[in-house]
Image 1 (cartoon, rainbow, N blue to C red):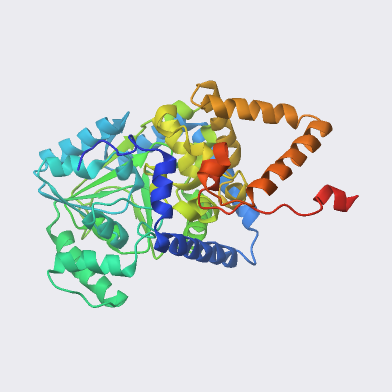
Image 2: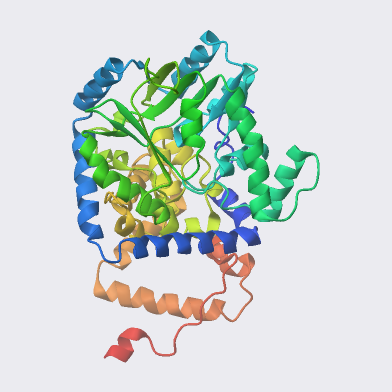
Length: 466
């Protein structure tokens, strides 16, 4: 597997069409995301969720708004705790730092707990190129790894897979046909992963939060793999985005309920791991050495810009759960690590207009992502700003620019609005009598693929109101 991300070479439309052809995905993703949203609302039914969100927004704003100060404070605390700190300006540097640590330790086997940052830097292929056996230990990530696939959701990596596909993947490892039973499939995977934990030389994790006050890495999981990866191997490496800082330990009283509630609708995740350094003399377990790699990879470039609030994200996946586009096409259509509204913001910011500039167009701008974000990131305003940037960069096709200009002129006056609405109604009425095929719809060919044109009402709404 190459360390080059496969985003290049295809468009969102091509990837989306491929995903839309997957009948299971179009049922499974909305069903799973509906459940996630329902559990979130039930979790905070008798609480002031908006007030908690405002506290979360203030904590993230304070941390990101004074990032250099808190970074210095965090690094100093890490070093006092016996942690070796490395700064990685980009993905390539982060990969080389981690490869170097593994070489120094003579590591042959590595276990990993789910981390979007390691997906972002394409770490696994780099370690595999060094002959290291690396095992993903989150159950969903483990299946994704077996299939040479990638996660489709920030919280639920295999939301796009059927139980039959998971069974087939695990049966390949078993060398026999496993039973069609979720509990038995999970038990088999647990047995395989337990051996990996016991044999690993190095454990690699991400970091949900880094507490500047105490030099503590915080990991939240619903499987015991986070604790196993960070305590059993003799070396622990944590890859942490520089923006994942919170100033004080007491801030966790806000951030933990927010990330658990927004992500899975829980009061709190099953495991909350708080790691403040390698094993000390009087402690019975834990790694002998601990490293933290502080990843920039485009984050610092957002400071002081109108996109700074994108760094407030706590990677809960809530915006994906309510996005009408993500719910139809899933995460793979976005082409990179992050899907849904936050992916449509982060990808062009981290990868540039050429690679990800089209993604902000993949939004209805309904604002549901703003309403559900636990730290109140104004995602739909960021998406609008990115659309403006795309136009300014000359990346918008000429026919789209002309159409948008004519539309803006037409709808800038009541007369133009009424006239264009009548012409549009007439056009839709004529096209609606014919097969909804590209040869009949001309410039509307892409829009009408997979859709039936609506029949206009006999009497328009404005006339009925009058």
